[in-house]
Image 1 (cartoon, rainbow, N blue to C red):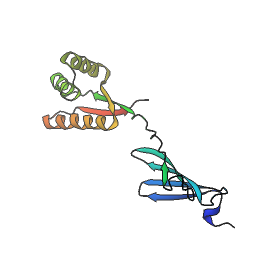
Image 2: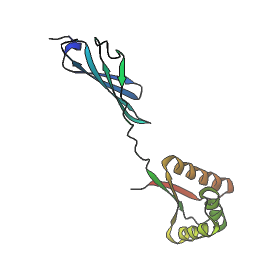
Image 3: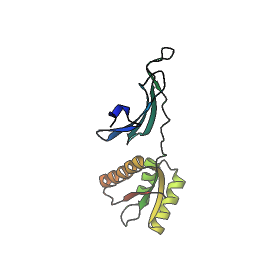
Length: 162
């Protein structure tokens, strides 16, 4: 059996906490040298995305740089999902308080806030806004904290959009 570095190709897989690196080495043989190889790197970094790189080592060729040639790939980033924030009806929160919440946390005009409040009263809930997940959760916490501070049972929820 050939030593590992002389085989056609092999994979090296490293696990770094929540990140992983996979390296595939491809030896390339020619008449001038038996030490040329190519390494494909595949980086998976969960909060950021995926990155790839191709490194080529050209030993024994004085006309070329004997270092590494790096060709990084562009990260494949997905657009963050959107979440809808709803304000729910209850029998105790006043019309004015719900309008104030919509104006303060969702930047609605008085007219928009009043229309949403009427919809909440008639339909049981009203769409306050559409945001990324983190911002939607923050809005829910802000609404419920102010409601508790003022003694109202107003509830808000965040739901993912399809």
